[in-house]
Length: 211
Image (cartoon, rainbow, N blue to C red; front, side, top):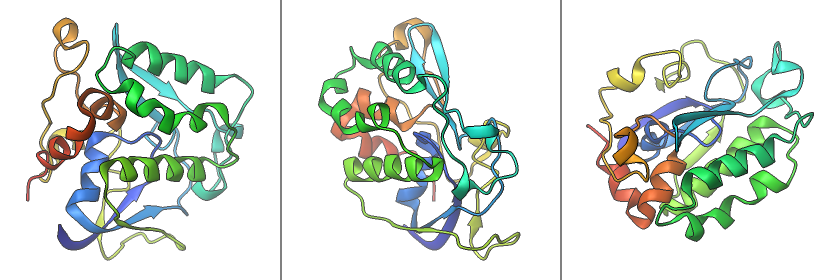
């Protein structure tokens, strides 16, 4: 680990690149005060499905526009939890470790959570527990335009090319269930690595880090 802290955006079922920062830094700050941004990993994630990369979006009330991230509420006008679960099940039920890990995530698809940030933080906690890591994670209490730490709030995003430009990250290689059909699909939710590699996920994740 480095001795430097890092500031990350909140993320739902975060990417492998995002999770690599939890092995690289010994202090993690999650931005809780910024204004919510649509079409980012704050409320969307991607998995590898039978037809290729699939985007799954978590709906928020009134689009969350104008709200600070810690006040954005989840919307339940549609049964998105069932749709997400069925999509994940269809994509990963034939992976080696789906049955082993899926129970750890059931509550995120059959229980209602009020706030997006709390939902994301609970998912993050499960990811850390399954990796058997205990990083120091804190939520910001004020918004800093120039924080005294590595600022990745707007870098780890589907709107940037940071996935390819990150000097501390290299794309992992591991077996994916539809790899023979689509080749290796990059930049997915950590769920993909977990279901495909199981206990080996930590070693694969650690191998992505460039110091």
